[in-house]
Length: 296
Image (tube, rainbow, N blue to C red; front, side):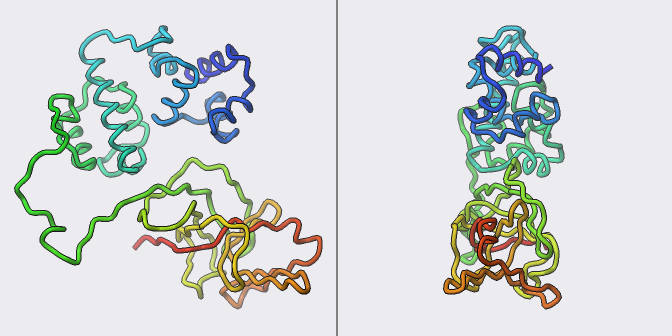
C-alpha cells in the first residue's frame, strides 16, 4: 500500500515524520495523514514526494517494484503516462484544481488524479475531448497525436465581438477554513483547499465566513472573504483576528493611549469584544479583509 511504501522510504532516509513534513514544506498533519492512510495525495503531491524520495510515482503507489523508473508493459502504459502529464501540466499552468477540473467534466477528484498519474490506460474519447475543451487545448495534442496545442479557428471570439467583455485571469488562493461572524471558532491554519478567483485580487489567502455578525458590512454566512496578510490594520478596518486558538472577523479599533482593543461586529445583536493589558498578548491579527466572493 502507498502508506507503507511512504513509511519505508522515509525510514530509509533516517527522518521522522515531522522532519519530512518540514523538508517537503507540508503541514505536519497532512503528511501524517498520508502515512496513516487517512489522506491521499493529489498528483502535485505525488510528484513532490517522488522527487524528494528520488523514486518513480509508480513505485510510490505500488504499480512497480522498480524505484528508479516506470515499468511500462506496453504502448498503452506509455501513452497514459504522457496524457496524464499533459493534463497535469496544463491544469497547473491554468491554476485549476483537480476538484474544479473534475466538476467541469463530470468526474470526481480521485478520477482526475488517476488520469494524471497514468493509472487509467485508455481514456474514452468523449472524456478526453471534454478535458481538452476545459483546458483550452487541442484534443489531439492532449492525446499525444499532435504537436499543435491549440486548434486553429476562424470563429471570432466573444471578446473580439464585444468591447465590454473581458477574459478573467484566475489565481488560486489558499482556503484556510472557516472564520466566525459571531462567536469565535477554532482556528486551523493548516490547509489543502484552494479557491480560484480573479488574479487582480491583492490577497494572500481566504476564509469562509460563518454566522451573521457582519451582515451590515454585507458579509454573509458562506461568503469567501479574501485576506491580505498584515499584523496591524487601521482603526475601523475589518480584519481576521486570532484570539488564542479561535478566529473571528470583526472591525478593529485600538486605543493606544489606554492599550485597549475592541473588536466590533456589524450586527447590533453582538456585543463588542474588548481586550486590555496582558489579554492583548493572546490576540493576533492575521490580516485585512480586502474583498469577498459569493455564490449566486
